[in-house]
Image (cartoon, rainbow, N blue to C red; front, side, top):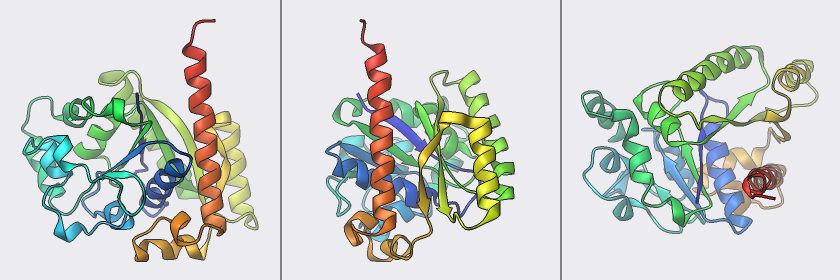
Length: 263
């Protein structure tokens, strides 16, 4: 059964979509079956997966408002290698429509029950704000991956996000936990980067991934070609870093599942 991971941070510009797309492609490269869900009306994860958001017949909007079944919306084996539930600007309307709906925070979780057995991982790219779309993602997920830059304001935003995760866990999804924190746009030459990184390790311990994602030109260029960096330049530092992150997540997942098997 798939592990469902929400990739989120309420602060924009931290590499959230970059992480979702490239982690999805890297997990696929390790022979895992992956579904990526674009839950951001900007549709950047859709475009970064090689799918034109402007020509969609069905999108995650139709899934959330009940216009179509999930099987009809999933795009199989995109140019990025994984399956995709795409998004575009229509998704903005879904949030408004959901506000007056019953069980509005459960829409995504309920629909994913039909496909969980088909995948090893389901990754959800969340919008950079706390709204009903993000709440749907956190209600559906069992884990949260938090991309963040090592800067002062990022720490401040992380505190607010941790509070949100705790509230969702207490109210609607007791299985929700922080899967890990991934340091993005990492520059080891910066004293601020090193200081914030030390604080993260001090407060969150093994929740901080060993892998860091460096600032990398090829990683920044890849979305304009509609490709994850592993397909744009497999030998770049960005590609190697996301492959390392995929390996780290696979190991943690295996350890968790092994722990559930009776001795």
